[in-house]
Length: 440
Ligand code: CLF
Ligand code: SF4
Image 1 (spheres, rainbow, N blue to C red):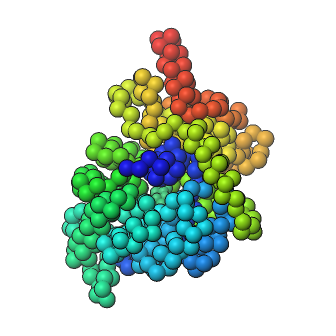
Image 2: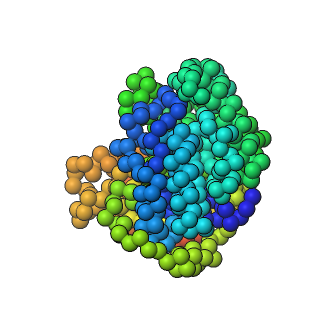
Image 3: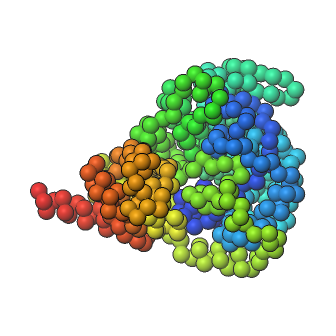
């Protein structure tokens, strides 16, 4: 594995996601399969959350947007194509866009995300273009389980359904993953966790893709597109505990990703701060200064701690801590402004590991008492508490008196602090343990 291919990629390296940004260009509208959780009116759910479908760009427009964004975001290190359909069902546009982007700056990392059906036909081209990261979304290796997930597959002018469709798709996904590994392309496997369908099967998927040479496994909770078959049939997303349990089982086998944001096909910015819906932030400039960008990224790399590894300590006595952050690997976000919290486990030796990201609605609406106007704020607060109810501590850079008191009341201790997340986790959990033992 090449360290340089990993150090700046926010999805392949957890620490990099605190510092580096990615950009998706939505050049791929068509899809060649139908997943039961998908509604084609929305972005591909295998890497996205349902929202208004991303505006489709031509490869040339995509190149212009990337140049603009490179001028605006010196920490932009990766450009990916992930939809809104399947990039390899739109291979001509996808590869043309990658060629244009690579000609802007050969050092930008190119990243592709696919359902894998057409992957075996394109591995050569992927390698030749210097695409170093490919994600394959693979939800089952057993065609009987796959038949519950995929409605149909269109391949070579023929339409396949049910078990036959799943068997064809799975065979091509596995072949493609093996070919990527042999070609030296880092392959991440995404799986959608559908509790009653593949919850207990995902460990087998991990075992198989590891055997084939995949780099990591990203198990994402099901998000139902409105109007999809699963939505109509009442399928449900896993609970936070179910997600953690399934991820821990796979983490015994290989590296798992726990910081995925299931971002849009046109997402721009840090994983935790999508700017795609605020286009006024992007200037018209088509000129970017490569030397300044390179120097900026070198400075970031010099401050990073290196590649993350799964901590091997004893987690039986661990506590869970929610952290409000805007990036840079620091506690630096006010509770009321947080749209997500990173949830860590900290063990008795002070080691910490990320176990998930909890999306919430920002609590503060500008009222003096942090949104405590007695109306919508009460609902938002109770939803946030519901998302963080397994946490004992909450670290943030500030919090109003009213929410602070209410959090204590439900058993979550807010601590106002700033600085490096790992250090703050260690210090505050030690302090809490000391305090608890002195009181006994
Ligand atoms: Fe985009 Fe995907 Fe590349 Fe990352 S996203 S194509 S690997 S650059 Fe990342 Fe977004 Fe999760 Fe995807 S957080 S949905 S895993
Ligand atoms: Fe929808 Fe599945 Fe195609 Fe993605 S791969 S666009 S989720 S049918």
